[in-house]
Length: 137
View 1: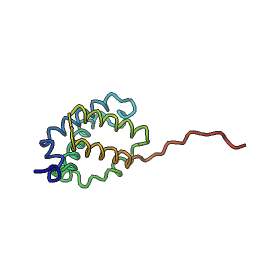
View 2: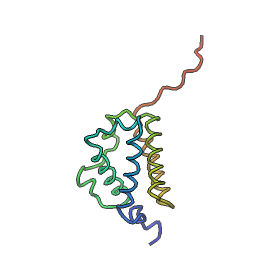
View 3: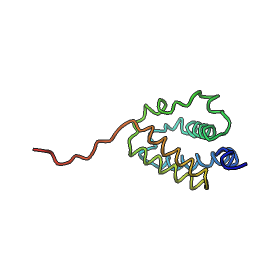
View 4: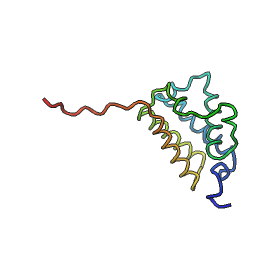
C-alpha cells in the first residue's frame, strides 16, 4: 500500500501511537500555567480520552468519537475558553513536543503538524491588541 492509499492511523500502526501522543501532550499541559486552568481536574482524564478518540477518528481510524459525542463541532466546543495567539502558541508548543516524544516521523508527522497548526489558528477566538504605536498629536 502506498502512502497515498494509507491513512495516518494505518501508517502509525493503529491507536497506540495516538495514546502516546495524547499522554505526552497532556503531561505538557499539566505543567503549563496558561493552559492548565482550561482543563478542570474533574475532567482532565475525560479530556484526554476525547482528544485521543477525536484524533484517531480524524486521521482515519474508527469513528468512536462520533458515536459517543456526535459531530466534533470544534469551534463551538472551544468557544467558552478564551483562546488568543498566546494560548494557541502554547498549545502548539506542547503538541509539537508530543509529536516528537511519540516518535511520529515522515509524512504522517507532516500531515499531523499541518493539521494541528491549521486547527489551532481556527480556534483562536480572541485577537490580542496590537502594540500601541506613537499617537498622532
